[in-house]
Image (tube, rainbow, N blue to C red; front, side, top):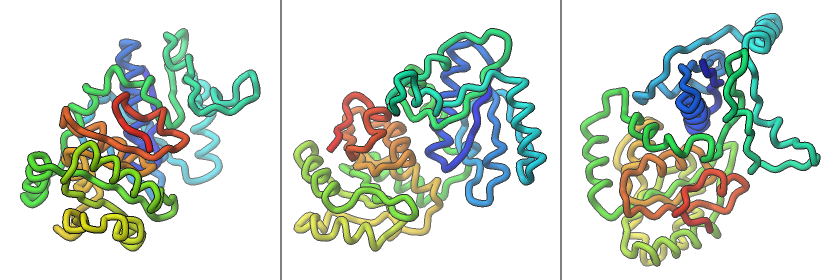
Length: 283
């Protein structure tokens, strides 16, 4: 059995799952998801049940008081071989390098099952199984006819999703989007730009000036209707091309994009080289 801790937002949960799935496949083991963090959170929900992702079991323990937290940690440490991602960053040379790969993830188990705790936002952990994972990422909920129609439209017309991230973790601003749109126009001139954002004032500030004469080719997906975060994820993935933010959410939308001729542009961030596919462009 391989056990992986699932936590934080949907994009992070997908990276958690991807590493766990790939590890279980390589090891010939079953996969269990520990969803305690999601199940005890007032801010984040377990989102992976919105997809047809395969796993063999799910466990969850109360985590509300000190006794419960201590019990869960002791039980985990006794039962499993715990592999904590952050340990690989603090290596023997006492340097911090987020691009390090933890070899323990790839080692066969000895006596105890592996328990993976971390973000695992690094393609080498799961790239060989990425096609299998994205093939399972079909909606496990009923989408509205409007969403289905927009997905078909975005898939069959020259579109580019633009993700502008706001909120507590801000994304890149006007300078990045100016460079990204200029580069996209070089690669795929004349696209329709569909903006996805949780901060419309920031998106307007970042995009309105730089779009200029191209402003007639820019629309906000929110203007087409009211959609859930999951709906917007599938709509973003349906666009033929993507301009990403520093976001696991839009990164997974780009992974899911099935257009073989897609152009994907992402910001030059500390994690970009870890998460990008070989043909993605960093600006």
